[in-house]
Image (cartoon, rainbow, N blue to C red):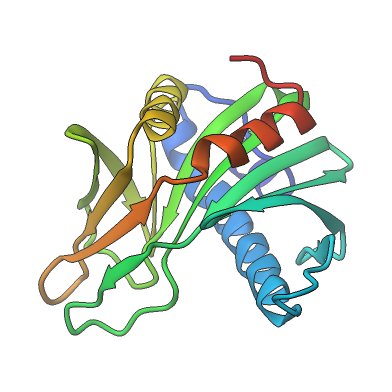
Length: 205
């Protein structure tokens, strides 16, 4: 039941979270790529203030700081605020990839905040972890399909805190075949973009 609900609204954390998070993240990946495509279609000189989500819900662009863009929108289950960024350097290692991305999401009405997620853009090796290194602080993220995210809300919070203080995040994933890929995200502007979604969704730090 929890996983079926996740198709419509993000589930709460719990013992069965690992089974539901892939469904949750698949929905958000669609949203993220939809908004990313819309933002790339806009004029770089005169960016728009909103984008369209996959469900037709208008998402307001809260601001862009360096490589990170903050958004907010409302749905039946409540307000959603998130920021998204792309790596400044991406090593394909011979594997065919879609655009890799990173995202932090708040859903305050469901008491969910700081959800960390990464899209690697290719099918990850089954059972593998994606490694995340932020200034020497190392984290392992579990995977499903082409996506990776933290196992617990405590780990989410620790990763976000490290990202606000760090200069870059290095993400390594292992495809089903071939060598690992490495993506390097600049964290310049991350803290400022995070502050935008914190304010929009009233998340305190």
